[in-house]
Length: 146
Ligand SMILES: CC(C)(COP(=O)(O)OP(=O)(O)OC[C@H]1O[C@@H](n2cnc3c(N)ncnc32)[C@H](O)[C@@H]1OP(=O)(O)O)[C@@H](O)C(=O)NCCC(=O)NCCS
Image (cartoon, rainbow, N blue to C red; front, side, top):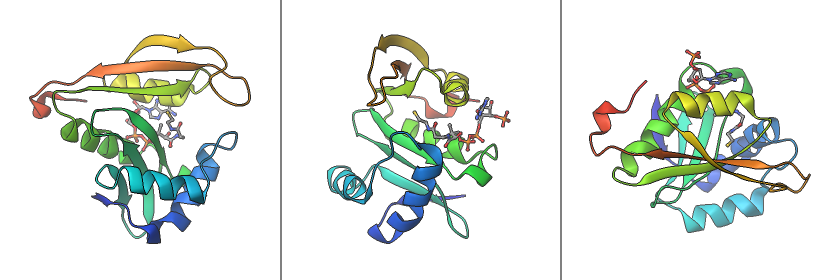
């Protein structure tokens, strides 16, 4: 699995992944451009024969978004991306917001040691609330499992 920094040439594939992953609140092309400008070193993609997924996080540990192509899920792509963020942010607390109803993603993050820290009511535009999940990061990145 190759993980590398995003380039604008990836945006077309990322927009397809995005619309499958977040039908109710997807980022558009303009949003990806500004995230690319804001986080040039921490907007990463997994590439095989195509772009299989992406993660955007701030260097201080806030996961802005991540998604894996629907037909490539449950094959470790998301795990590769989260491990890259963990490795980048050693000694930081990794944190994110997730829809309360997004049980699959919640299970995924729990598997990596994230715990629910807070709940934000009506966080998303459609009125759904978010859970804030956090994972303290050990300096010993090798210890980060599963
Ligand atoms: C959440 C997401 C990124 C996970 O990516 P992935 O590549 O499927 O994850 P992995 O294959 O690395 O999964 C690792 C483990 O996490 C857990 N997991 C992942 N998806 C799960 C699901 N839908 N339900 C339950 N557990 C899940 C499992 O324990 C899995 O291991 P297993 O497949 O051996 O059982 C992906 O489902 C996705 O893109 N979802 C839509 C977008 C989204 O919700 N993003 C997060 C928003 S905050």
